[in-house]
Image 1 (cartoon, rainbow, N blue to C red):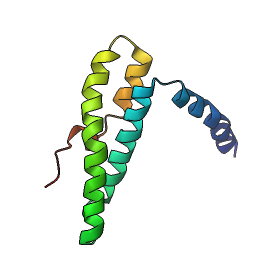
Image 2: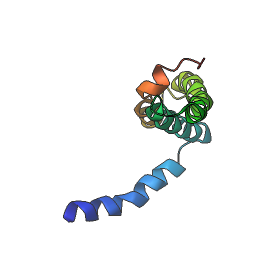
Image 3: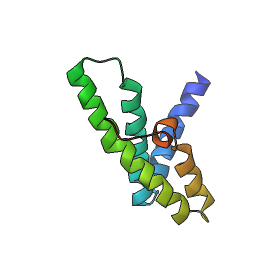
Image 4: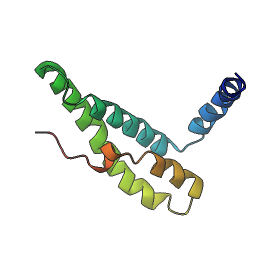
Length: 100
């Protein structure tokens, strides 16, 4: 119970941290999160749904991969921001290749 209470108290702090990110980093985080989401849905769908999933992967993973390279250079001397960037460099972003 105490852990749950502590976690709930921390939620506003996490939201505040997200709001303080530079706009380009926040957009990257959104793309990386969506990339991971869609990649997790790949392969277990009917053909129509798989087309939607592939489109979602292309629309989020491709931009996230490009943003990652640019943002790592841009924020190389800002450790706190670089840490956020690297934390979202998930396998889906790193291994993305354009679908079909």
